[in-house]
Length: 381
Image (cartoon, rainbow, N blue to C red; front, side, top):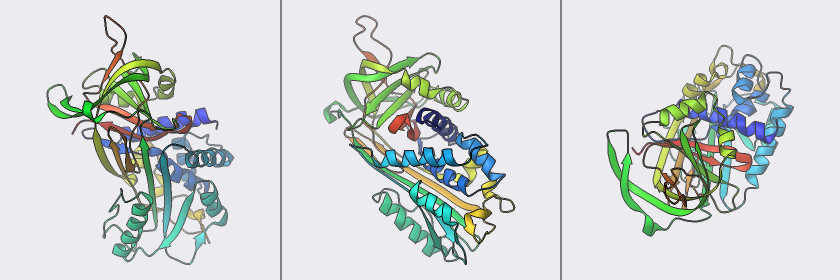
């Protein structure tokens, strides 16, 4: 799969993933991090799991795994080579301690292609297992993600636990002046408002006003210009859920992003922090990924040698993101830098477009080849 096709597949998976989360509050997630682990499981799976995973990831059902290896191998290399920001991707699969090992070829793929670790652990001592995993996550996310699992999260029946963490820290290419940040009205819906700190900057951003999506897009670049944040602001104050559903139903997001052009924009954006914890055992089945959680027929017996009947018992993602004048940082999520779009051009002078994010919007942290690293929705609450 070439990079353009992969970015489109990630965008489709990401919008569907995000659309399954709570649509009444602020959210952030990293579907790509989940995809990385799912792709790894695909290499060690049989049907029915394999067919479900390939379909969800956007790969043909006759894929011989060469495409998965090459595509995710290239992604891992590009993420490691990103300049100007700090991006640390950490994935791990914890397996119940026992008289078996991870299948040799799969273990090699995990290390060489996905930069992922396997580790045996004694789940019977739930508190000790939770502490061990939480310490690893804290270390990998620079202490931003804490207490991922509670002391009672595991039991003697815990078999296969998926953990993924991503730490990002970046500075805007052109930072916002804190002196321009003031409290302004943000519309929670068409009736309720709150006052929150709003940043301001006027410059050239990549921008487009999309009549098809019924939204404006604005891109803000981070230092190094290999990562950016794209804000998608619905035309309607209460239009966010409709825009998200449109994208989840297949509207070509990558096509919209490619249409953005440098435009002088007066951009007003809120400062915010968002943290979201996601139980993937509940979310992924909504996307058609069910077999790997089925204890009777998971399709994962070939992960281990000798073969064992195992299935995914826990899978958690916890994401944190902060957006402020300088950029931001976060675990499995992160900051922002602006280089992009805006609409509502001045009717008289047409000198500047206006992008005023004063009502619920979608935001995307973009990486190499316009691959979505994080996606979230800000609703002001």
